[in-house]
Image (cartoon, rainbow, N blue to C red; front, side):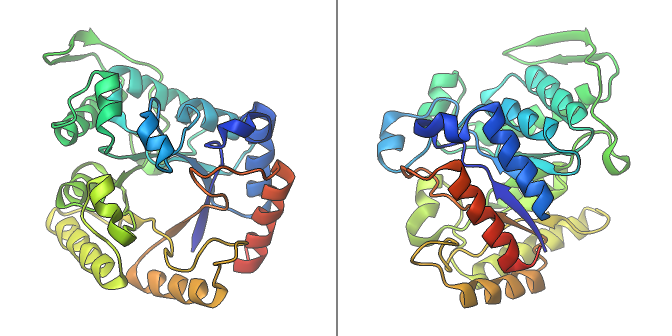
Length: 312
């Protein structure tokens, strides 16, 4: 199993501890040295105050943040978890992704999602109702641009005539774009994995979280297994080779180092998820969206402790 560490860059009230170039370099290099597969960050460019007050979180810009992580490391993968592509013009998004992929020498994994915060879509001037269709269209445009050949693409919001964007992304595993991992639990999300993706990032939704994030529920192993079987059937029917990466972690064992942490349950769930075909585990060692007074050194101690616990 491969573990991907979430960087606590949501802790904007502690920007000197977690949000400077030095802080990100310290956390990323420590993760690499300890054997983590990668690091990830989230994406909320302009969340509403109601989301923050209800336990939501701020973020740093994911592309800039991951560039800092990449320049401080040599092997560590960098993952957007998840980039809401629909907030962005697809040509500008394609340029950012290709740039980061080259800066990291092919270590970028592009995690994308349809999004769920209506107010953020409104602030970005993008239709919330058609966000899934917009994501599909943007991924089509980005892939066409990444080919590095003159492209003519028109839409009601833009008209591109014989445009060229260089450099192209690195050719990871023989492909013409970074690996794309699609987030979301719905049938549309699974179809998007098969059509555009190399991996799937399902979202645990205990306690009605599915209604808040506007996706299908995955609240036990049975519902996860059903969704994985659906993905595999559609993957094979589409003639896709190999197996998709699947990234999800235990959601009922608590967080490492906290009072609700259950080590035995965590290890049991890892074995079960592995049997289901899960390939990567996202790790949050800070309370996403919750105020923290932890220092960077305390966070890094927890990063090391977890690495020892799972035997990295």
